Image 1: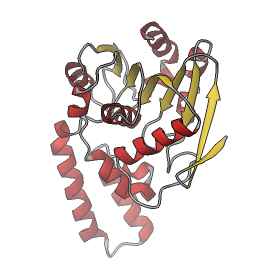
Image 2 (image 1 turned 90 degrees about the vertical axis):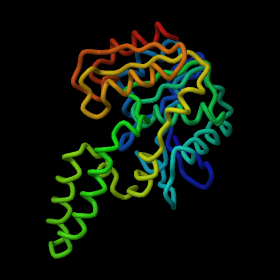
Image 3 (image 1 turned 120 degrees about the vertical axis):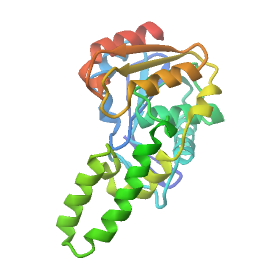
Length: 248
């Protein structure tokens, strides 16, 4: 289904019946990321999932966005459909968005589930500094190359520091704004029950980030899954689903 929100076409889906749960996907992903988890939850809850602007089949914004812009569009989406969210589930950057939106009051929920949540930015100063250096060096030393050769080299360089930038190169400026937003102070403001689920060897989000959010969010619970995987809601859907249902 599609709906026009703030002049943007937004793709979304409903599944199940019961109290409403909003599902927020991560960077470079779309609402289908929850396809394995959704059947486990939809017997008891109504799931609302959407493709955030610029991802999946939703229209891209005409300027660079940060987490606040995304929180604005999600708030408008929920208001237009008259949805009161019982809980929010956010994976990766969707977790950072949920934390920011809840702390500013743009989003509301009784409970929050964070799966491999992003948003703890300043612990990776060295990696971010390397990305900046690579970007500058890449521009200097690739001007004489063909476009295809240059793109292959830049992709390899960014990949060495784990950057998600090239998953959506057309949203480069949005990516830069998003990764600069540290949500640790926002996490301190949360006053609802929060469940964090992290893999102990996540290649994208270190377990230390989950532990840090656990420290910052008063009364939160951290569950750790033995896995080398960022998409534990897919690879370990049954276990993640059981943890979520018990928490809710």
